[in-house]
Image (tube, rainbow, N blue to C red):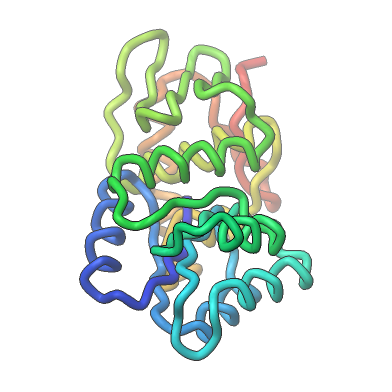
Length: 220
């Protein structure tokens, strides 16, 4: 899953980026409001962590612009403002959740995972496709009840496909959502990782739709 972190506090941003990366997310970081607004309009994100007090353009203005343009990714506001009217303004602008500084990184990650899960249409915290389960809160796959060992990139790919199980996910979409903006779309890395995941699954769950993309579905 690909996340945009919009935070101008350098030290805090570094901590959050590291924690999100350790939790299995691909993370882009922006410290400037106008740059963040542009990225949200032009890049594909599964979720955004948005500070309100930013140089260039404030967080509420950014959020208003995204929602007016039809950008529907879930947004978690991160701010030091504790007043109710500030929270109300954030929700009215289109925010999905609100976390006040200081905060625990573990809570940020749990909230973000829940937002992404619900945005994909899943009410329950455990996603299932045949013998494969994904515990979203724990970021853990099991196959027939046995933990599945995956690298960070393998986990991102399989988690995105699991959130969209049954749907053909185009190659370009998958690359955009599991890598940060340094991803090379002409690379064969994605094919190599898909092959590794198939071998680890050992059952025909991950299908290649020639010329269309990849689909995670129960065996016929």
